[in-house]
Image (cartoon, rainbow, N blue to C red; front, side, top):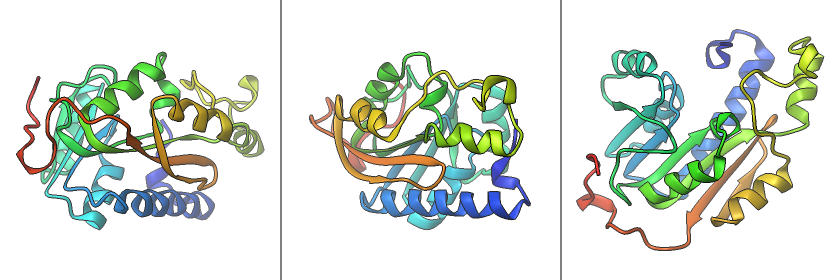
Length: 207
């Protein structure tokens, strides 16, 4: 898998800086104290948010156990769990910010994934997906995935800006929206209070 966060290509580095800057800007609006990143991979984005936002707790989850082990070794100051984004083993409202960057496009049932993300946050969710069709156009321009017309392997969902807004708006309120090329990013707020209180007294442990 291509490691864009570790790329030395100046164009890629500029795009990633824009993406990370937008993520910090949107996440800061929620003043999060407890952060969960679902689909955290090796933990790079979660650690970036931790360094800039200084939450009291940062937790990552990923479907792949080997990836979780790698993230735990790389970032021992954070905690990690192997779990599906569609079945998170946390109490309702355990976090006040839940993050899912470049995950929903890989999920067969993104509505179920969003429902689960909103269940475990007491208030905010920060979500990003590739911006179609520009994502494919950029892939084609760099000569990648030409047989699939620029579609990255593993992307089973494809969001335009209007489609992403509509998808999110069906379950939550979009507080802020950004377009750091070539991604779409939104800070969403859950409409209903969680079943369990969040904040300092919330338990992060399993349901």
